[in-house]
Image (cartoon, rainbow, N blue to C red; front, top):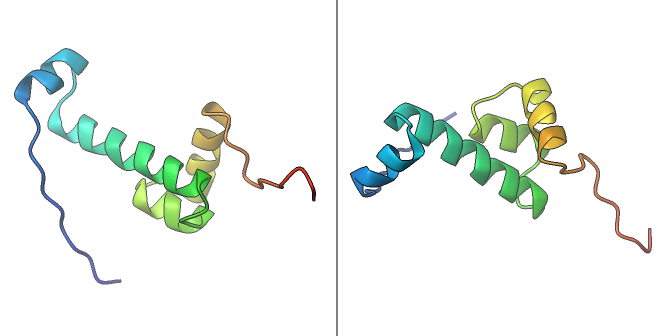
Length: 77
């Protein structure tokens, strides 16, 4: 699969405030983005897991931890 890189800048004090390394912050951003895109039906379970750099099983655990259902039925369904 072809990859691309994205770059953006943040103030250093954000990492200091969060007490995170750049790598930890990047992992967290990837996870939170994947969770949100999955929750809003923009990415599939597998795509979101890939974005978060997790296995499907690990991503399922994150969904559970963040109280996001794997299958999100509408009330009418």
